[in-house]
Image 1 (cartoon, rainbow, N blue to C red):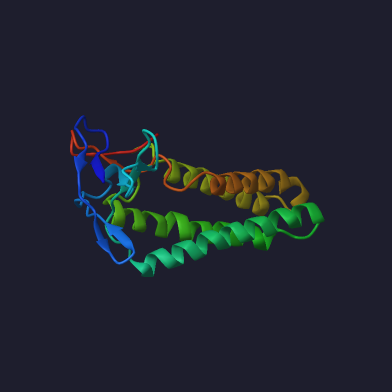
Image 2 (image 1 turned 90 degrees about the horizontal axis):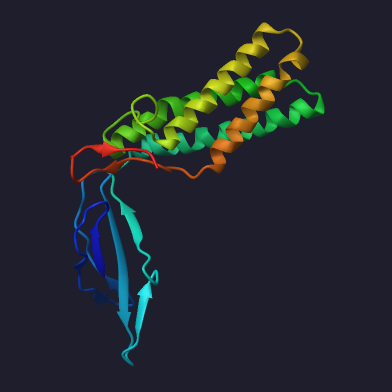
Length: 205
């Protein structure tokens, strides 16, 4: 196995792999939270041929983080999926003509609990910062959460100031589409990366 720190102009360090039953094991050095290593594996067959993993000049990126408490992680996951579930039900209600006030509130509440409250707590536990999105950084996960939160705040506010739900439906539809887009964007895209030159944590793509 060959590894190096991401973003550092340094040669790859070779680490010998040892066999443990049917597994080949190599140990990589621990890194600070948000530190990243890139590595690749070269295997030599009995006939002398070489197999590269993942192959060619490609490498695998490994990001390090501190442990995330299960008491925060599990409720976070549950609440975020419930927010998505309520969002889907809300959109279906909009087009079927049913009342969507209750499900809209449910979407917002679970989004607040799972994303706005528990999300930063997980971020702090894993990487040392509560928030790395705008205006403090360019973390895509934090920024897309903020966008969804604002969209649902506006939608629910509109639902409560307009008696006729039909007049508020466009705001709810937009909020639903924003929420669905958030879940389509990969998690941790543009997330925290430890800068070995400055000792700071960078964010963004």
